[in-house]
Image (cartoon, rainbow, N blue to C red):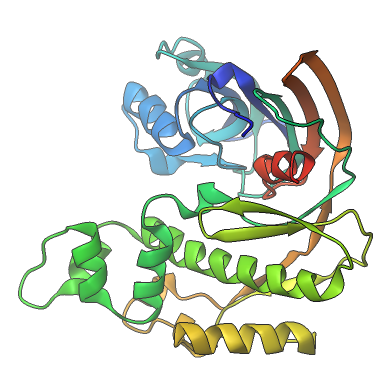
Amino acid sequence: MYQIKQNPEDFLVEEIPKDLALDGGDYTYFILEKKNWNTREAIKAVASKLGMKDKYFNVAGIKDKKALTKQYVSVFKVNPQRLENLKIKDLKVTVLGKGKERLKLGQLLGNKFTIRVKNAGREPKKIGFIENYYDDQRFGGKNKILGRALVKKEFRKACFSLRIRWEGRDYIGALRKLGKNILRIYVNSYQSYLFNRVIEEYLKTKYKKYSIADYSQGTFVFSDEEMKNEKIPILGFLTNFENKEIEKIYKKLMKDEKIKKEDFLIREVPEISSEGNERDLFVEVKNLEIKKEDKTTYLTSFTLPPGSYATIAIKKAFSN
């Protein structure tokens, strides 16, 4: 089995920003280069050094921990010189200038990846697109299980899983102490699991020939067959199904999971309710280059749209 991320230097990610207007304002934009830090902890470290709260910082994307990453950050009302003078192990700040707007999640044209694949047992395939699955990073720890518990209103079960204390029967109060962003991650993880299951079953009915790759939640179905792209629902309480085949698969899955789409309206914790969304079935892999470094090592580079997973591209290129 091939290996990636043995060292952070083997997995490089560089954001490609969109609409970065450096025309003066209250927000300072900077590039944050990090190694062995996840985005949230890196921002907290920078904020702490500046004596600020991390809520004044905004990013366009979330990046993995075990990687070398370059990402764009905005911060409200900070002296750029203070940022430039920061010294934190494995973090580097490069100030770009000032703007009038904070960065928003998804404000990217894409991400450029350079990934070294080691101990490959086969030659990689040249791929032009990937099936737009969520990968294992989305399901770390108990994220999916906790998301399912929240959607099913099993708040006591969620507290048990998280090993957090509650007073009386105030399970919701205990959970809220984690913060709405953390709780949303759990709900989003469960939605992502359902999305993956649905497109796996859908593509099995559409492809004449396909390969598979295992992951923590099941299997991915891959093929080189070109199909028309379409938007696939991410389940929420306002989801409307235009594709009847997708609706049929979702309904069967919801029956198996013992949920309804209305369950994503979480009245007890309304701030984590989800009306749903949609996601491309396929995304293009651009500027793919593969260089063989030795008998079993390949250096790959390519660009993906924001929100798509480089590890899916690697799995597809090296799948059976």
